[in-house]
Length: 244
Image (cartoon, rainbow, N blue to C red; front, side):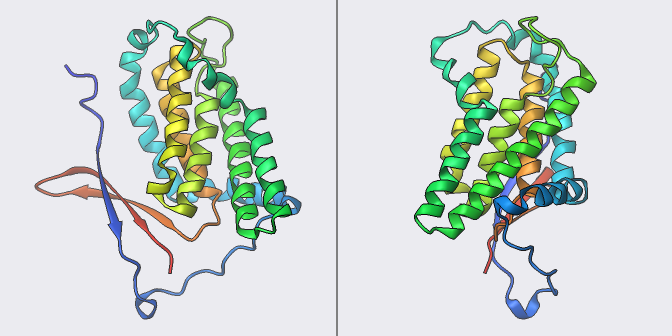
């Protein structure tokens, strides 16, 4: 039996913004985030996480991770290659936070308020995804493939980098954020190649990152997830509605 027979089909569509006179009254926009409101906004993000579309992402990440677990043993045999060593430090939480804070500092110096908002959202997404993954790591206690510790599931490197990429995608659009997701994928692959995580670890880590990216973003774009059931498709329809 093929290992991926349980994976849901994903259909990508681009939705056209609804005219203003057809839109329902939207809730009041959240205040612009800043470093001064970092922890208050972080608590707000955590509170919103299970009540928005991010929760759906986590559910599907769990399904994908369960399906991927059938390949854990085979992927763990992947010989380590030097080309993937860089992912260990690129995806390190300290490196990510330092780079994000540096971006915030440059944006402040250059008087680019929008870039500052994006940087703060990215930093908050990194912090929330790191907290969630470490909570699960110590709750699950799964041994790493290299037997170095018992905090393999899920991958924190993967969660943080996919969270960062998702925030960028919400601001600048998916096509422009493809390089960011490329970096996140490279880091996820490096965790497999360097024998630090199983395939199911990085799969669920990516799901957490995407979910947190949704929850932590103050951007204008909006992603929607809905079941897609018809004669021609069975799965999930993912759409992006751009702001006005």
